[in-house]
Each structure stands twice: as C-alpha cells, then as structure tokens.
Length: 414
Image (cartoon, rainbow, N blue to C red; front, top):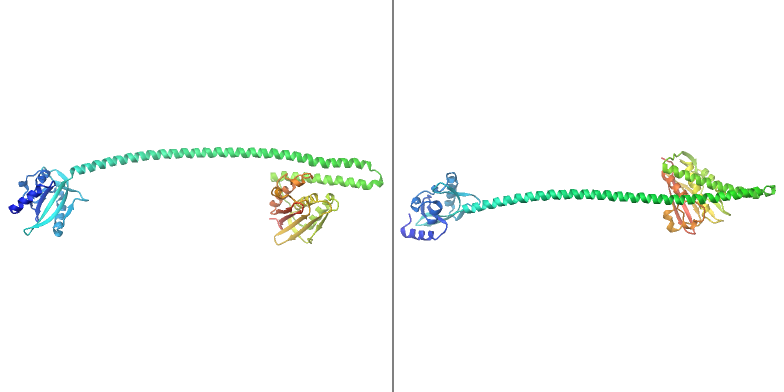
C-alpha cells in the first residue's frame, strides 16, 4: 500500500488522465484505480482495491493474460498489449468488451509496480466492423459490376468477331467477284485475240495457196516446169505452216485438259534435228542456212521424241521467220551426266527488252514483229511441255542483234 502522500499524488495524476488507469503490484494485486476505470468496468474503487487483477479478465483469456504479465515482469519494459491480438475485459455485469492496454513498470520504495492504461475500443471495433461490412459490400458490388462488365465485353468481343467474320466473308466475296470478272474480261479479250489471230493467220496462207493454184493452171507446158515447182513449193510451205498452227491448237487443248500422254523412248538427238532442219527448208528466206556448231552424232536421250521435235520446230521456225535474208542460224548441243542442252542461235531482229517478260505468254507477240505472220502460242506450248518433262527453256536477246534460246532436258525422263 502506498503511503498517503504518494497515494494522493498518484490519484491526482491518474484523475487527470482520460484513459482508465490501474496500478498493480508484482503479485497482480490492484492498488490504485482512477474514475475513468470505474466508468469502464462498472466498479467502485473500494470494490477493487487489493483484489487480484484476474477479476477483470474473462475466464477464457486468463491464461493468456497471466503469461503476458509473467513475461512483462521478466523484462520490465514498457509495451502495449492488444496490437495485432484481440484483448478483452470483463465488466462488473459480466459483459465482455474489447480493450487495448499499455503496461508501464516502475519501482517505488523498493517494490515493483505496473501502471496499466486501458482503452475501451468497443466503438472502434464497431466502426471497423461497419467499415469491413461496407468494404465487403463494396467489393461485392465491384465484383458484380466487374462480372457484368466482363459479360458485356465478352458479348462485344463476340459481336466484333462476328462482324469481322462477316466483313471477311464480304471482302472474300468481293475479291472472288473481282477475280471472276477479271477472268471473264481476260477470257473475252483472249477470245477476241484468238479469233482475230486465226482469221489473219489462216486467211494469209490460204490466199497464197489459192493464188498459187490459179497460177499453176497457167503453166502447163514442159518448159514451164520451174515455175510450177516454185508455186508448188509455196503451196507446200503454206500447208506446212497451217499444219503447225493446227497442231499447236490441239496441243493447247490437251494441255489444258491434262490429256497429254507422253511417249518416252530412247533416240538420237541428231535424227530429230535432221528431221526438223529438212522440214525448215520450206521456210528458208533467200540466202538463209542452218549450221551445227558441235558434233552430237552419239548423243541420245530417253524422252518424248515428238515433244523434242515440236520444241525444235518452233524455235528453228521462229529463228528463220524473225531473221533477215542471208543470215545463219546455229545449233549447238551438249550433254553432261544429267542433262542435254540445245541452243538455237540467230542474228535476227531480237526481242525488245520491255517485251521479254511476256514472251512465254499465250498469244503474245513482240511489238517489232507484229506485221510478220505468227500466232504467239508456240513458245507457250513448248514451255509447258518441257516443264512436264522435267526440262526448261531460257533465252537471251538484244534487239537488232539476235536471240539465243536454250533448251535443257533430263537425259532420262523419270
């Protein structure tokens, strides 16, 4: 028990403090309480003096409080209780309420005491619970709105995806319509070119045949044999030309329908070249000749002989047609382990540079030979046949200098 002067001082100081204050000794006996303490706990001062602190602790929390105090007396340092843990006190009416505690050790007259500051945090707990409830409610509202927004976004994404798909289909349909329209226009243009070309290419040689036939009738005498031979040669030349055109047309149809059946045999290149050169004699202009620049008597291949003959006939025929009189056309043949290469070289009109990219297109003719008879389909057919047989065709040309066509075919078709 404090002496009276010290007690008066303590009671005066404690009454000035708004928090509840209780002083206990090292045996946890209550020595002093202030009036704020009385209000919180519902006791009068006289009811608590010399009583154990346990009277203020709910039964289920007593072990924890006893452990706190033992630990506190061991270290004797100021500390707060209730931060991070829930602490509860027992009211006189047996109601339990939440508190925060501050423990302050001190020594007086050789004895240890603890001053305990206590705050009733019931109102704070209620506010915290209300805040928690409101936060939970707000979180639920946010979650619900987020869910609704997510659903809306998902619907919008699906709608956008549907719109994208519809737009894509529309664009595809438009593109297909444009392609179809272009094909129709190209086809109509192709038909027009074809009819014009056929009309011209057939009319010219037929006119020549008709005139030559009429003239033949005038030269019936023996001494006029040379004149007859001249016109017979013209007729044969025109018939040969028309026959080549018809063969080309048939080849186009078969290539487009994929009805080509290649007949692979083994043959000497020389036999094909001799056949083509003999046929080309009918086409020669004055002073033209063909010269072979290499010996290829022993070169043979396993290919379609008629396609090789068709290829060389077109190339040699073009070389003759697009070269002037008194010019030479050269043929060179070489063979390695895999391929056979044939070059047809002329010193003719050449192909204008701007026309070279289109030279293998069907019905295309270079601008510098438009007045010379021709269909513009031979090179197109040759290129397709060679591709089917594993070969290829290339060329180099310079206008007014000449052209070299190079045909490469495998020695053996597989």
